[in-house]
Amino acid sequence: SGRKQNNMADNNEKTIKEVFEELDVLVERLEDRETSLEDSFRLYQEGMELLKYCSEKLDTVEKKMLQINEDGTFCEFSR
Image (tube, rainbow, N blue to C red; front, top):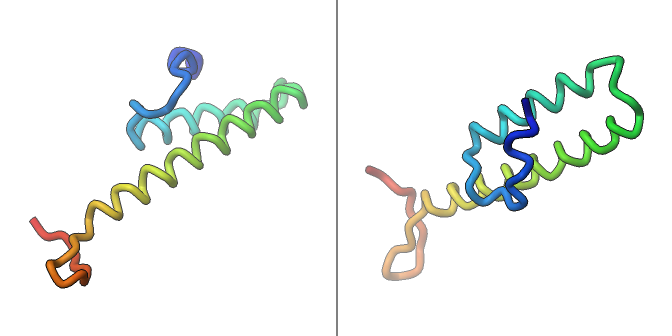
């Protein structure tokens, strides 16, 4: 079931929720005793790439939550 989104070469369109869902699938496959060692390494690598993407996306969101005042100081974004 994790295959359907693997055809997206870049992760730019994925939401954080979608990434976590993919990570859940990867963890399930890693925990499966039938998964070969080679597949385990590949799944681990995929998971690390997804985590990196997620971290970058969260950093971007965090930066958007800060506003720069006219004098160059930062303040937290408020609705």
